[in-house]
Image 1 (cartoon, rainbow, N blue to C red):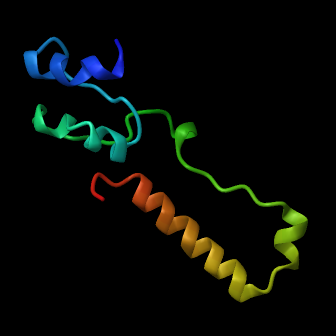
Image 2 (cartoon, one colour; image 1 turned 135 degrees about the vertical axis):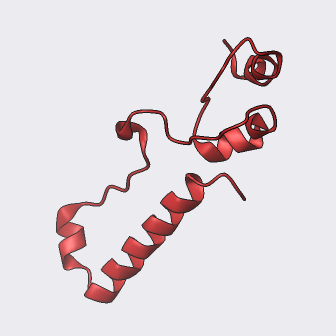
Length: 85
């Protein structure tokens, strides 16, 4: 089923549940408007957001920059997995 058909299929009862993308995208599609419950992240954990940094470059950074990068990546992950903007 294409992404554009999911909303109507939920609305008509053709589907009982659906997940199209990350929660922020599902919310933007309005899926919460035609479902009783929202259970984000039904997809496998391997699809979660990640950050990759060269270990040698990481080890050269001062502690304060490492902490800033850690906080920024956690904030970005929380934002991308939230259902609000």
